[in-house]
Image (cartoon, rainbow, N blue to C red; front, top):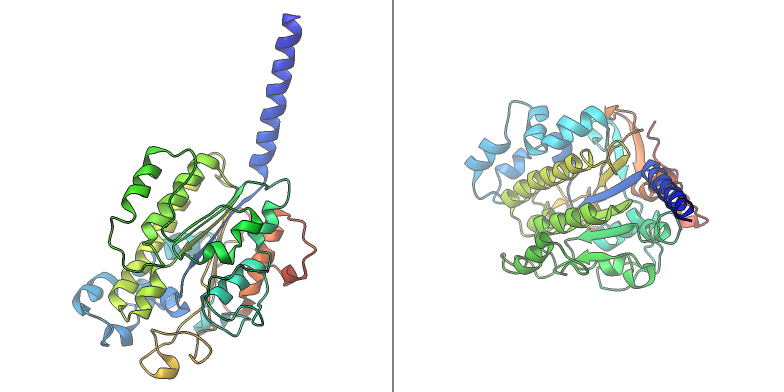
Length: 361
């Protein structure tokens, strides 16, 4: 009898390890957004017109930190992870100076419609025409994944903006969303307890958007504990600093977000569950204006601001052809969700996911 029990235990252990091994072979996706970051900043670095404008408070400091001898050097100084890692090992779309265009299909050109398009694969201008806290009737790719056995309870979202529980419709979708100043819940480690304690002790710059460092570390601790297979992270500071006309803080925040993404990628590449089997898809919800004129104001975006429909996409992962900065071609934000569907082999009959996935090969 003892031999039979021992044999049974060995078989159970072997079967469970096989399941884990099979699960580890399935790809993982981190979908990451930076709110309101222009393609110009990503591909050309610091904007000289804005540097020399009233939007800049400390020109000398920004010049020292972000101004080199060329646009290529400038963008590396601003976003070193993008230009030293993604440009070498992944794909970057959206440099309109080289004929690579990425555009929104929604006509609202602000956050809720932009995030809906990214996450659902379809614009919905008829129903989503404000940033109000209304539960999204559309199904996001997060909800789609969470509805399928392979990814049930293996999806999570973290955001700085407190509207995201409504965009993702956490009540209907069952996707756990930590956004705004929400605390981590459940069985917490010491770092999560500390983050809960200090996130409101730090300066409250905006009541609806917490500082990105908290969003980042809440996400990272959850990832370390639970190893979700589909993770959405939305960093929000950049857009709010731009709305406030604070070019100094916008630049520093963009550099910091690049460093946070680098930190997350470094963790992923040193974790057996994620290493060499994880995709990063990074984008923005909308563009913004270029200067000080009302119809192209840098602080603004929306239907009346030229260029607000222009965005960008960066992709990094195991089966991504490392072409780096792409020249020529047209992509749209509604292709992002279908790309996640394809990577994860999700079953989808939803016509909202019908846009063509991005060709990663």
